[in-house]
Length: 70
Image 1 (cartoon, rainbow, N blue to C red):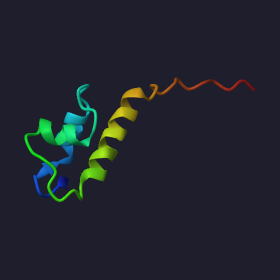
Image 2 (tube, rainbow, N blue to C red):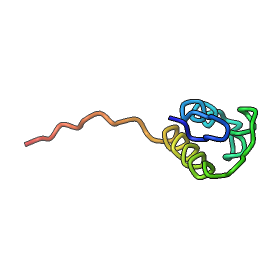
Image 3 (cartoon, rainbow, N blue to C red):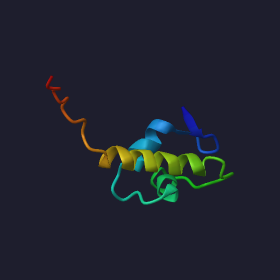
Image 4 (cartoon, rainbow, N blue to C red):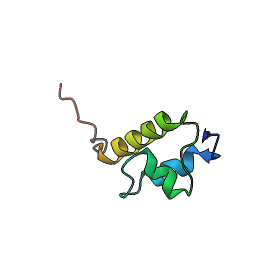
C-alpha cells in the first residue's frame, strides 16, 4: 500500500526504515529514503508506523498457555 503519494513511498519500505535504531521520528523516514515531506498528509501515518514498529519490538512474546487445574 502507498502511504505517501507525493514520494511514492510504500508502507513496507517505511516499516523497514522505521525498524532501524537510528529512526527517531517521521522526518527520519523521509530522509533515509532520500526524500522530504511535501504536502504533509502522510506524516500522521508515518508516526503511526513508527509507534507500531516500536510496540512490536517491545511487546513481550506470547506466553505459553497455562494449564488449568480442576
